[in-house]
Amino acid sequence: MVKGNKGKIDNLGRIVIPKSIRKALDIDHNDDISMFVENNQLIITKGYKNCDICGNKNVNIQLKDKFLCSKCIKTIKSL
Image 1 (cartoon, rainbow, N blue to C red):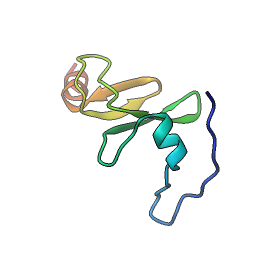
Image 2: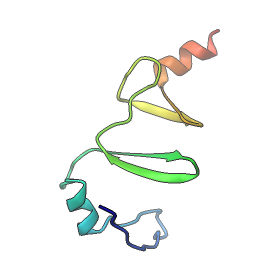
Image 3: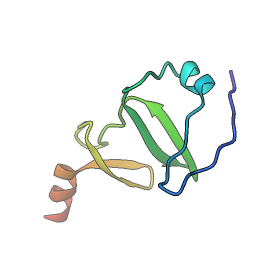
């Protein structure tokens, strides 16, 4: 199933996810979502994207197609 809508980003950087898309993804009020860039596209998914090294769900940075938490970033910096 393909869903699509057009929208505009407001002056605070926000965009409304249309009800039809929220319904298709089973996203409800206060659900956690992840936003990341993949192949030059913004991807929004329900739930979290985990750190690619340790699996932590508190991702702080995306580096190309990899997601890293602050603990792994510190470990890498100390090498």
